[in-house]
Length: 424
Image (tube, rainbow, N blue to C red; front, side, top):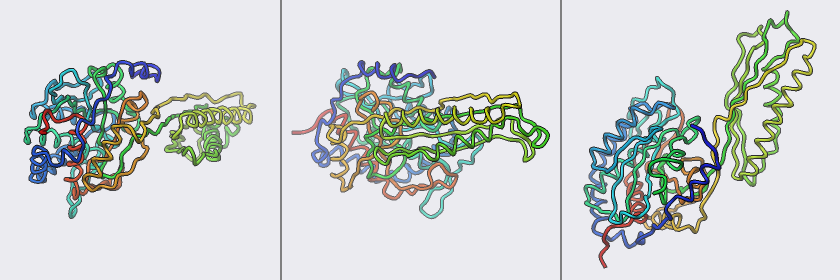
């Protein structure tokens, strides 16, 4: 979908102000409804695991999240959420109303997509206490948490002061380029109503992401005439130029502060050892904590491409042929942050500590990048449990400790959206 930073930033003027932190977490811990909700959590472990497995075994490859979205949509309807709908890009949304109908929405979200291509075997195997399957942690765990929260609120009979929107987004991973959350905050049906955003991405309970890691992702392709390695020697070679580009980028003095990185993730091209390639391409990922440093790194990459291409064309000028280039920006994630003393961050820290968790703040690249870049309060947290080997076929998830993650998620929801009634 078309995207510009300026159009997104313009939309921030339309968002409701954040008005969360209605009740201290320590106060809610002793509330009868919270205690009742914890009882629901404790007796539902088998059901939570079954839901988690069911979600994971529905394939959701990049740009093909529809089947998993269908399931989330049906579950949202079955669980009684209001205004359940699928938007233009495929996000699935349902709302639990609040007593104050004029209040802004707090969004609780997880992403539908995985990094794994069509045809990947996503059947879950149990090995000891571990559930093993591609995508079992990232982000089947987050989606299962959304369903769990909705069930817990309903079974405990909890009414909220302000409404909460549960959203399963598309396109969080890779070339999806955050297209789901971009739409949510830029022209979606809920855009003007959102006052805060919390996403569940991955596992664990200690980390709290309140700073967005900006990135640029490029796919660069060079084309030439090709030919025989002996008979046509002297013709421009796109692989040689790509090699010069990668070598120059590898020498870039990336600063440690602000932390900055680059990665050559994939190189393709060529037909045989004795054939001059007609094409070569490279995928490059650039990241930095600082937007200006990211811009400098991006400029260095594009300058290096020009120098590498010009060098190959100059060295092989006698052939009368030149390389052509195609440069595509396949991912652009803005940076942004809210300070550690923001009410939403303070609430998340208080919630964690009240449950005996030792939280720590971090920076990452998640769906929260978009609202944070707009100045809208946003966090990304883990869904509980532990996991390993993310983005690998060997990915695994262990539900031990998941109940603590669900308690934290529930308490944060109650702190941000408020109970409709709290006794004196």
